[in-house]
Length: 115
Image 1 (cartoon, rainbow, N blue to C red):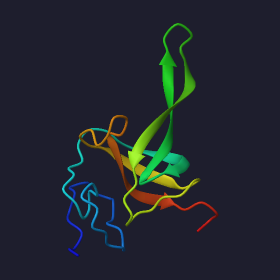
Image 2 (image 1 turned 30 degrees about the vertical axis):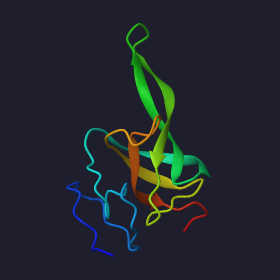
Image 3 (image 1 turned 90 degrees about the vertical axis):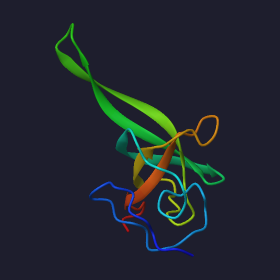
């Protein structure tokens, strides 16, 4: 096992656990580039993949107001992070890892259940 590498994003700490997943940004060979955002895990039923709900506001020019919108994003969930349903996570964009997966979980901000 190797030490977690620096992924070049300030404010995000590496996980305490180690893994040997090649698609892990901390212990593998995946580079993070592009969008970085926060969301909530709504499903963790796939193997090493989670569905993250990203809520955002969209400005409607006609009415000069904002409306709430959301998008569901599939993200790779490395074993060293192991995010569960209800966790608030930080997600970063990578190269395409599968047909529908182009994001990876970088860390857990808040665990579900108040931990």
